[in-house]
Length: 178
Ligand code: IMP
Ligand code: MG
Image 1: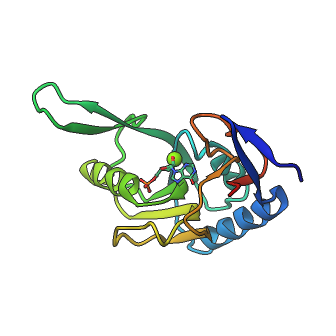
Image 2 (image 1 turned 135 degrees about the vertical axis):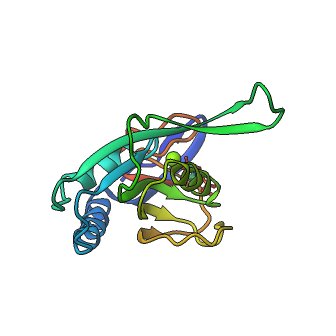
């Protein structure tokens, strides 16, 4: 498969479309085996859009629902610091059993913020599913329940993941060429 160029940087195929499909299927099987009833999947945009779409087709849990959120950071009016807000949560999600869908977990900072904001909504159980995980970069103790593939600390793009907003549409996952 051909190398590609995004913003003048070269990338080579790292995980081909067929392997991604097998990984996604296996995460779905593991989630289905939990027998959770009426789960609320929460897909973290933008990166997780392709992963979410593919995995949801394989979920067989009863009364499955999905919502899409975005983590936005803005400068608070009253405070001087950065404030994080979840965009996309509408209605009451208290007591719901949540399964977070992430494209990639790197340092875990994003995940930690999302979980703390969800806890403010008094949700029930929270489980986390991620397509990719960078164990060497991870700085948190939060448990990650479903991991598709652990990878080295390389920069990857494609299948939803971007390099400065380019590359999200690619069917394969690429990594930066040395
Ligand atoms: P974290 O907060 O460090 O875990 O990083 C989370 C976010 O950083 C992910 O949701 C991605 O948007 C982005 N990210 C981390 N590693 C990569 C990568 O290798 N390629 C593209 N985006 C990445
Ligand atoms: Mg992301």
